[in-house]
Length: 517
Image (cartoon, rainbow, N blue to C red):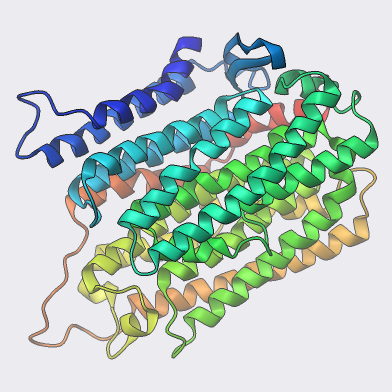
C-alpha cells in the first residue's frame, strides 16, 4: 500500500512530463491535440483507480492510524524526510481530488477551453493534481509547504491562458495573494520545526504542543493561520477568489473550489489544532468571528448579485457562496471540539462535491447562452431551463438545494455539526461568544436559501421557448458522465453520513487528544 500512495502522488507528475512529449505513432488518433487530451483522461483515470484501491485497502477498523506510510531521509542537515501517509482525515480528500481531476480531464476531452496548445493544458492539470494530492499525503512540514506551493503556478497559468474576460488581472491577484500568505506561513512552519526540533507532523501532533512555549504557539498559530486563511479563503482575505472564479475556465473553477480551497482548512486541522493547541485556543474566538462574518458577507454579496438589474455573474455568485460555505468549515474548526471538527471535514468534502457540480453546470449554461450574466439569462422569458433543457434545469435545481443544505443531501450534515460544535465549544473558550456565533451562522443558512432559490427562479423558470428561437442542447453524454458521480455521491453522503464520519471521527478524536488515543 505504501508504494500505491507514492504512485498516486508521483504519477500525475510523470504523466505531465509525458504529455509534453510527442505522441507515439498509432496513438495520435485524429490529431495530436486529441491524443494529449486522451492522455490526460487515462492518467487521471489510473490515479483515480489507484485511489479507490487505496481506499478499499485502508484498514477501516483503525482510521486514526497513519497507513500506507513511507518515511525515508531527504535533507539530512535539516532532518527533512519524505514522509507520506493517510488516515481517516486525509483519505476522503485524497479520493475527492482524484475524482474531480478525472472528471475535469474527461470534460476537457470533449470541451477543451479556448486557448493555447492542449499539451500545456493537460500538463498543468496533472501538475495541479499532483501538488494537491501531495498536500493531503505528506507528513513533513517542509514537504507540506512545497506541495502547498506547487499548485499555485499551474492554477495561475490555467486562469491566465485559458480563462475568460479579465483573466490576466484575476491570475495576478490570485498569485500575489496566495504567495504573500505562503511567505508568512513558511516563517511559522520554520519556527515550529526549529523550536520543536523536528518537522515531522506525526511526532509534532503526538507531542501536542508540549515542546513549544505558549508564546511560540501563539506566534506560529498567527503566522501559519494567516497563510492558510488566504487559501481557504477567510473573510476579509477572500477578495482574490471571486475574480479568479469568474475568469477561470470551467475545469479551473471546479478544481479551485473543489480541492484547492480545502488545502487551507486541512492545514488548520492537520497542523495547527494538534501542534499549537494553545495558540489555536487564543485565536479561536477571532477565527470564529471572521468565519461567521464570512457567512453573512458571502450571503449578502450573493443576494446583491442575484437582484434584478445588478448585472450579476452566475459564476461570481457561486464564488461568493463559497466564502460563506467555507465560513462554516472555519467555524467548526474554531470550536476545537470533535463535533465541530468532524462537521468541518464533512463540509469540506460536501462543498467539493456540490460546488464542483455547480461550476460544471454554470459552465454548461454559459456555453449554451454565451453568458453567465443573470440579467441576460433571466431577461424576457429567461433561460427557462425547465422548459428548454429540462435535464440541465433539474440538475441545476438539485445542486442549488444541495448547496443550501437541504436535509438528505451532503450539504446539510457539515453545517449542522459545525453549529452543534459552536453550541458547546472546547473547554477554555467562551460559550456565550460561541452561542452568538452559532446564532449568526444559523441566520446565514436562511440567507443562503434565499439567494439560491432566487437563482433557481430566475434561471430555471420562465415562459416557453418563443416560436422560431433556436433550441438549446440539453445534457450531453459526456456531461452526464462527468456529473453523475457528483450527484450520486451528494445523495450518498446526505443519506449515509456515517460512511464519512466513521472515517474522520476516530482520527479527529486522536488528533485533539494529542495522539494519546
